[in-house]
Length: 476
Image (tube, rainbow, N blue to C red):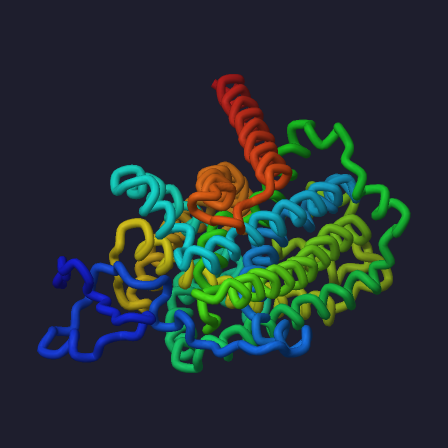
C-alpha cells in the first residue's frame, strides 16, 4: 500500500477539468491524498438548464440528491424507533416526528446551500476553517456516526434475510458484507441512474406502508392530536424513544452527504443567477423528498399505534412485528401473511438504499476531513467489516436473540442524536457567516432558530445521559 504525499494528487486545470498528462507515468495507488473537488468523479457531471425554462424542467433536472438524502430518514433505524414508539405510547410521539422532520428540512437546506455556494462539502469546509488537529477529532466522531448508521443497515438486512429466506442471523450479518458487490455494480451505471434506483426503492417502501396503514385504520383524530407536543414526552422511556426517533430522523451523516451531491449538477458557479437558481431548486428537491420521508415515518408510527398499541412490550423486535402482522389476535382481522412479507421486503429495500448513501458519505468525510482517498469498494468493505463486529458479538453472546440486536439498534440511533450537534455546530456557523456565504448567509432569524435547536438537542442529550448514569449507579 502506497501513500501519495503530493500536494495535489487529483490535479485539475482551470474550470475543474482533470489534466490527463498529470497522471502519466504515475503508478496506480491504493491510497491517495484528496485535495480536489468533492466526489470528484461525479462532480458537475449532470447537466442542468442554463437558460430560462419552465419550473418543472428545472425541478426535474435538480431532483435526485434529495432522494439520496431522504433515504437516511427512513432506514431500518427509523423502523424500530417509530413502530416501537407507536406500539408503546400510541400517537404521543407524532409531534417528535413532525419536529424532527422540520429540523431536518432546515439543516438540509443549509447543507445544500453550503455546497452550492462555496463549492465545498461540509467536511472540506470544516477542515479549511478549523485546522488539521480539530478536523481529525471531528472526523473520528463523524466516522463513528457513519458506523452507527451502518449498524442499523446490518441489523435490518440480516433480519430481513432471516424473515424472507430463513437465513440464521449470524450468517445474515456476515452476508451483508457482500453488498459491496451491489455498490460496485451501481457505480458503473452513472450517478443519475443511482438516483433513479434509490427513488424507486423509496416509492416501494412508501406504497407498502400506505397499504398496510390503510388496512390498519388508525384513529385519525388521535393521530392529529399527537402532532401537538406533550410534556409527558420527557418521561424516562418516552425521552429515550423520542431521542431515538430524532437520531433516526435527523441523520448527522446526511449533512455531509447533501453538501457534496448537490455539486453533481453542472452549472456556472461564476454566474450569480445560476447559483441562486441551483439553491432554489435544490431546496425544492430536498423539501419534497423529506416530506415523503416524513410521511413514511408517520405511517410507521401510525402502524405501531393502530395495530400494536398495548402490545409494545412484546413487540420489541422486527421478527415480533413481522409475526404480529400475520397474527389476528394482535393485528386484528386485517392480519395476513402478505402483510408480513411486504414488511420484510420493505425492510430489505430500506437497508440496501442506506448502503448506497452510507458508502458515499464515508468517502466524503474521509476525503474532506483528512484528505485521504481510497477505492470505494475498499472503503465500503472496511466500514462494513468494522460495523458487523459489534453486531456479531451481540448475536453470539445472546445466542442469536433478536431482542438484543434491536436494543443495539435503538441505542445506535440515540448515539446519532448525541453526535448530531457535533455536525450541526459547524454547519450553522459556516452558513450564518457572511464572510463565507456572502449574500447567501442565513438571515438572523434562521441562524437564531438553528442555534436554539442545537442548544435544545444538546440539553436533552445531557438529560438522557444523566438518567442513564443514575440507572447504572442504582444497579450497582
